[in-house]
Length: 491
Image (cartoon, rainbow, N blue to C red):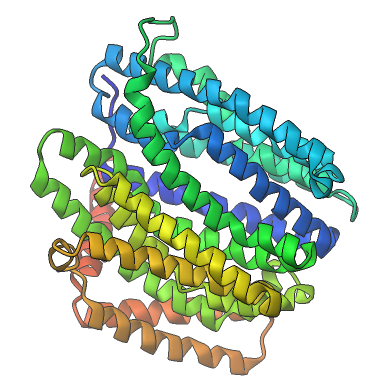
């Protein structure tokens, strides 16, 4: 039986993983945006988006379905082995057809054919995602392993970036190194597979058993991938790579913040799937309420702070050349809260209780809204129009999911202290905004303003006795006391 760590340990590991995801671009983005042209960065963004479309088809909804399927049979090695082999075989078969379609696209589409080397390199995402079986490790809640190997490969990518990306025309090399940093570690996943499942073919595979459910998750993933990458693609075709570069910078910052906010719900999916499979409904509801409460407490201040300090963030992470990224970033920041909520409602609540189809419908509605909004706003507003389209899309997704779960809403949000969170965020925002008047450098301004915002926000939550904040604070202090006693006993 696989040893399962506590939710707190998994959450801490996932937060470290998320932090590494933040630190890598934090270090590389200022360098890349200065070495490469805006057009070069835009080309890599567009190529990455298109490669992700094909990778999404090859994965066929497995990343989410596989987590749930493995979590449900994780206590039985034989069942787990058969499940993993069936899903992996299905994945490999589909990827053959995907690569064939990718080849045709490179051959027939002039805009892609002109940068064929870049697009072939980005296509390695497809096979790395398939053989990586990340869904197995998440289903078994092996977040320590996932975190350690991911940090190692990001460090390797960081070194390679500074060694080999030296000139404006090195965007193809940049694309290759980004693959190493993001999915290169998936090769280790495949090698390490024998630790959890038997590699000898078990035979008598039942691919049909998985195919029906996988297709629902695929449709859901397809709609999500399409509308999350649609902006870059439409900007590239309706405008130019330069606008895609501006938009891509704001999207990267937003994506990093979203990964922080969704860190908890990501590690909870296998746990709540396990609860549902064993009829532990009260545990399921308790965890879901706490996850929503956590998202609001974290995402609300993050959203407000980065709207206020978007200019300093863009100038620090990119340069003043990317000034046109500021307004798109401000427009798109509320999606950090929206995605945080829909991630819990859809991934952690609707999927485990068997409402995958409704998650798909919510995402499909968002995708349609995004396409229509992009067609209206991109021609006149460029990158800002794409940001507005994304904001509209994420709002639509949330509205649909709230309608589907309307009988659950009162109970799910019963622990969220909206007034306390909003008041604390508003006062903290006013307090930190005054730092702008000091005319400090971007880095110093961000450091001081974050400290002011965080301190004011935390003190107000403490004064108003916000329950989840007090619980977290108590856990932290309790942990320090335990460590202190252990050190004293060891003397």
